[in-house]
Amino acid sequence: MNGIRFNENYPDISVSDQYYERALAVQKPITQTLAKGPGQFTKGIAPKYLDRGKGSHVWDVDGNEFLDFNAAIGPISLGYCYPAVDDAIRRQLDKGITFSLMHPLEVELSELIQEVIPNAEAVKISKTGADVCSAAIRVARAFTGREKVFCCGYHGWHDWYIAVTSRNAGIPDAIQDMTYTFEYNDIDSIKAALDDTVAALILEPFIFEAPKPGFLEELAQVCRENGTLLIFDEMWTGFRIALGGAQEYFNVTPDLAVYSKACANGMPIALLTGRADVMELFNGEVFSYTTFGGEALSLAACIATINELREKSVPAYLNEKGGLIKDGYNQLASELGMAHLTKCIGYNCRSMVTFAPEAGNGLELKTLMQQEMIKRGILWAGFHNMCFSHSDEDIAYALSAYRDVLPVMKEAIESGNVKAYLHGEVLEAVFRKTSDYNIKPKVPA
Image (cartoon, rainbow, N blue to C red; front, side, top):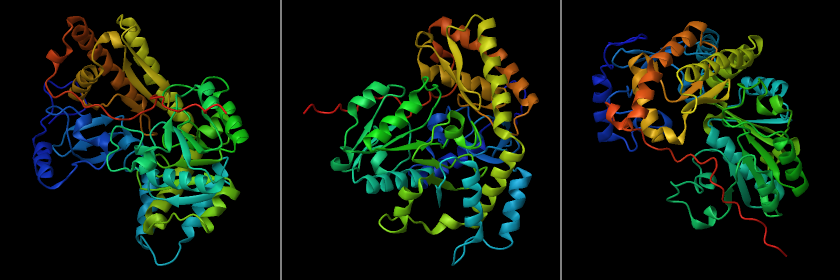
């Protein structure tokens, strides 16, 4: 079995493939999270099922060990099996998981959230990011008496958002006519389109591209002037770019904000924070409840995680270590004469390797790099989702792997036939829409 080293062979994934064949017979789809599914990891090379994790490493069902920069697609902010969090879960497990009445941890967590998130005049707890995004949209529509929504980024699987993607089957036309996407950093197009029918504007404060100077501030101003509620989707930015998320980092306070991924180190929980007058509607007119919203293991994990993030200054650590790998990659690309072909972009806490259009087919290039990084013991999907367990040794090893792999990439690019270098299947495209502009300007009077 392979380990975290420059292996002679690609990993044996026979047990993974056995599970995959079993899954095909009983599951549709076979993955519960698109980004974890086999379409995003090259079939024939990458493992399909993981068995365990510790710190920044994971082991697949065949026993192969990998350095992991995916962080379970975001939730692992501290590390796998992080002692302080797991101990909090165990202590609560001895007392019970879900109860017939409310639990004190609901209050304690909400008080903690109010301390660390700037706009948290009130807090609502749920289970998933899609839950709280949809709750935010529903309460914004109720508060404003309007129906239309402008969005930018990915906001979950519910009807109001997925209507703007290519996978919108099953959603009534009437719902599809109420949500519109806008171009990030294009404040003029937003100004031209905002009118008195727009209830909310929701966006990820950044994905990989930085906001232009003044963009978020002006966005907040034009929303306020138009009576449109501004919602920050902080699934990725929350607790990573700063403890209080992007709203703390940029000093821009939205009306509502939603969080999930990083706040409980892998346990399922989601948070909606915002203005008290808006959130008050959940006490009467607006319905948004779930049986497992007060599940106590996740509450305990969330409190323990946030305390660790605060006490250990984890966002600063992610910035420092993430900077080492992002800058190190770019330095290697420059040294190898590849700076015009590939670049690592984004904020240090979450960066992404990109290839220029002239380098070739993006999915083929990503597949080849993934193939070669997996051979060298790194579970690679193009991102550096940093966690507190990523060590200097991890980063040094990852950079040594990049130094070994980038010449392979260069050779494949120069050959004009990247696909010939692949041993597995090409990755599939994801529908994620962040820049498909389709907002409609106001009709002149």
